[in-house]
Amino acid sequence: MTNLEEASLGKKTTHLIKPFFFQLSGNHPELPSIEVLSIMKGEEFQHQVLEKSSQFLLLNCSKLAAIKTAKRAAYCRRSVELLFRSEVGSKTTVNIAKCISEQIDFNKFLLKEDRFKVRVYRIGKVHTEHISIHLEKAIGDTIWDQTKGACKADMKAPTITFIVLFTEKGFFFGREIFSRKKGSFTDRRPDLRPFFKPGTLEPRFARLMVNLSRAKPGEYLLDPFCGPGGILIEGAIIGCKILGSDLDKRMINGSKKNINHYSPSNIAGFVLSDAKHLPFNRKIKAIATDPPYGRSTSTYGKDIEDLLIQFFQNASQILQKDGIIAIGMFEEVPLQEIVEKTGFILEHFEKIYIHRSLTRRIGVCRLK
Ligand SMILES: C[S@@+](CC[C@H](N)C(=O)[O-])C[C@H]1O[C@@H](n2cnc3c(N)ncnc32)[C@H](O)[C@@H]1O
View 1: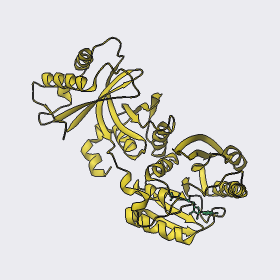
View 2: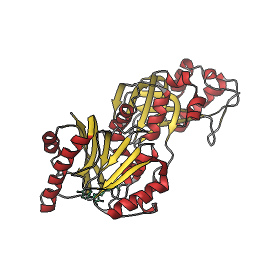
View 3: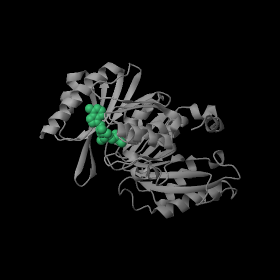
View 4: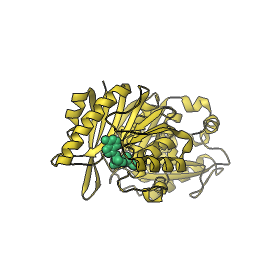
């Protein structure tokens, strides 16, 4: 968000702490909420978790934090300012609309020239007795009544969107403040980048890694196995000063080319270096990385384990206290042991399905 956008939202309302809910992607039970909370921590946004369940997070935070976080998060579909919540019970669809209308003074939210849209979503197959289009219309009718027809519905170009989200706990009603457009990551697909090598991360997954590292815009983000720069591109786009290193000169050059294409002003530097002996000092708080693959049953795998131990030892010398390494790896790598040997705490260790023949692990490790 630019300063101008921030200013136009109005400091008073954007900094007020109140409840916002985040509708998260369903491709992992834990990582999407860990991601949102990692961003909040990294950006030092004041927040408090009120409720957390699969694909759903209800937080107390500022509007600015809710917008910026949802915008950054790879696995967040939308963030919504909570206006009202209730159990569904035996309410009919019309009752739900009535109940919302009794609680909300829409004239407070809508100006004469506003065009609104109401959308109904659900997490899982809950409360399917309430057909989305019927409820959307019923709520639309109550808004029309309340505003005496001054505000019209506009499904194509609304100025304000109201959301009903059904979960197992009931329904949550609010005003959408951010929604992710379809394809917002695919325009940076690896094969569309100026330099392409197989093995680079997909942008959405790379963004997740950056966010899990709690990288903060304006601060350094290092990928010591940078390859073609999949992670660094996402780090640069969110405004981090990116540092890349790799053993392979072609990767360094390719990575530079890629970042120059997407976000040239955020390159802090590249070095040709072994990740076991990184030439950086303790200015770094965030490392997001994806080392070479290998399975610990093979000799190559054993090499990977040794490489990771030495990399973690070296990283413990260059990271600030409480600095984070977000790392992707094969399932078999004994990350818990590596982390314990090298002075880190394993905060999260999650399995993620990539495709039929590939499951990966993601570790979030904090320096003690
Ligand atoms: C899986 S790729 C990284 C992909 C990258 N994270 C991305 O998203 O585009 C692994 C990289 O590690 C590099 N590498 C292997 N051993 C290394 C070492 N000891 N030190 C530094 N880089 C190394 C390889 O050259 C390769 O580019």
